Structure formats: structure tokens, C-alpha cells
Image (cartoon, rainbow, N blue to C red; front, side, top):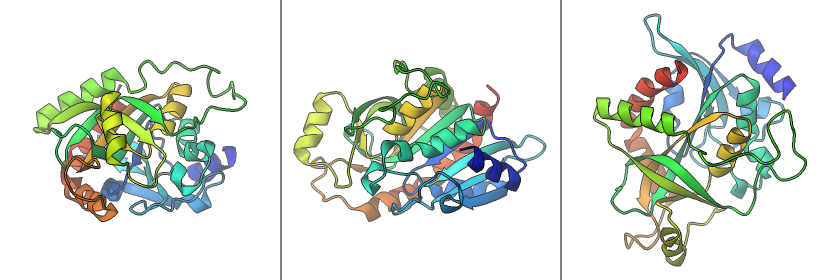
Length: 273
């Protein structure tokens, strides 16, 4: 990790306090940054490569804003998933790199299936909590006390004050932001209709294959987390349609304008906390 930090600091003079992980089809934000430096994951010591469709697989550090009010932002354009064959520790390596770079607040975004049918395709939903059904945890094994405690509290895995700030920002922009509980599954296959009925019964509003491990690792390191899901499809059995990755990516592209508008207004506020 020390080598990775040295490499990044040698390539960019910026010092971000806010980090962002971009989910499937949501990579356009990274292209909007100024003074940006792009570093492919394969060049960063300790990071695996991103193989998922719709994930660029690079770290982007740049500035957001202008007129003397620009803030520095670090962006993972593409993440690592358990279904790619990576260990839980590899999946959270980017989040741990963010912490080593001095990042204090983390925004996790993802493409998710909507279990709550009232969301509709393209809805942006603030994650209020999660249910870990991935069968693994990135904190298993010997604990690194320099990162955090052996038994970290997860009562507020997704910061209530960051959710409130995001909601108020959305209201100012005319963007409706709902809240919901995210269920993280292993993947890579989509869920069966019976599994979706089960998830609904246990309190899940959204379902996906990421985010949970990253949130756990971030909370372990006392980072403040905001989660935002883009609902790209109704979950299995709710629409009568078969699920398709191309649809996920297309809906992500369609909502990118709204998503960019929200992030452009929200991230400077997160930076100033």
C-alpha cells in the first residue's frame, strides 16, 4: 500500500478528501474532472484488475468545479467484485488505498435491481442500510489494528448526516432521492424470483452484487460512507421480463446526466464537512 501511495502522489499533486467508487454504467463522472490523472489499476501495486463489463478499471484523480472553488476528488472508475474470483480483501483494496491517501468520506455507487417496485427504472436511491448475503466478510482473518478494531460497529454503516445532506441537495436540484435497504449477493447470475420474494420478506428494497464489502472495510477504518444506487431494472419476477446486462448499462447511461448534476453539487459539500 505504501508503494501504491507513493506512485499516486508522484503522478498527481492533488490531495482529495472525498473518494468515489463508480458502479456499472456510471463511469461518465470520471470524464468530467479537470486536471485529471488516470492510472490503470494494473499499474498500482496491490490492486487487482477490473474485468466487469462497464467498468473502466482505472483510478482517476482530478478537480471538480472552477472559479477558485475546485475540490480534489479521487475516483475508482470501476470496482472489484467477488464474482470475478477475487478475495474479499482484494475487493476492498481500493477503499483501503483511499484511506491511505487521506480520504475521509467515501461515496459508493452501484447499479441495482429494484425490489420496491415504486422506485422505477432510473431512480436514484440513498442506501440506508445493507444485508450481507455474500457469504464472506473482508475483515475475516487476523485483524490489522492499525486500520481499525477487531469488532467494528455497523449500526450506521451509511452515514445519516451524509444521507440528509444528499437529500437536501437533491431537493434543491429537483432530484427525487428515495431511501432503501440494499441486499448484497454474490452473483454473477441474477437472482431467481423466489430469491427476490425472500429478499423482500427480510426487508430489502434493492439488490446487487457489490458495495457491501466496501462499506464494511470503510466503516472498519472510520471512514464516513454514503451509498447511492441507480435502479437499472426491476428485480427478477417483478416485470415479466428477463434480465440483461445491456439494459443495466443503458439505463446507467440514460441517468448519467442527473447523476452528474447531483454529484457536482453534492461532492463540494461533502468536502467542506
